[in-house]
Image 1 (tube, rainbow over the protein chains, first blue to last red):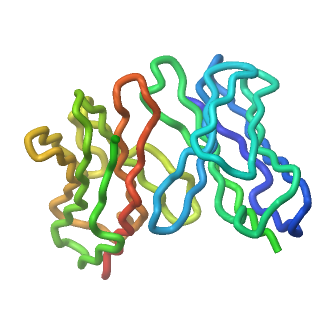
Image 2: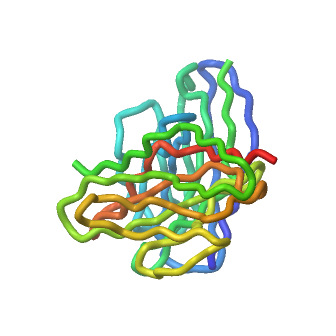
Image 3: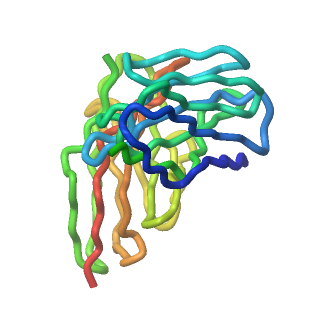
Length: 112
Length: 108
């Protein structure tokens, strides 16, 4: 099975500051990678997914961006955070046929 | 569009009682369906998927394509079953679609 490392676990940032959340994957090569936002009562909202290095697809318009500089590294970024960016962000990976997703422990972001 | 609904945000049952977490989906093709669980202070993890047709921790889920449902059931709930449960649909060749989740609370 795969292991997803995600950091930091919690982050407090002022409005207008930049953001960089990192996710790395062990146990598989060429995984599909995902960034979700988890909100209470609304489930998991897919933000970005990637099927390979440098290949990023965005699911929803937003203030965030994603990059995949290496096969098993996925980064969620923002140039200027908004209050509405506060939330719980999850990284996930799936390998092979992509029919099971493995999740990281998540990052709780508070924008003040 | 594909969609997953879980009508109950919160479900409370007493220990030893049967539990059923409801999940309905909308998808015109052959679905792959999953249940994910998140225990307190743990990461989200796969509980079971319909193609395995297995029982995990006493839970089972049967796909009913006529009713487009994939309800999660356990005959005798335990306190350690208290968690957040997400039903998920994976349309063929596409990304997962998650439901809003149901928080199960098993009371002593």
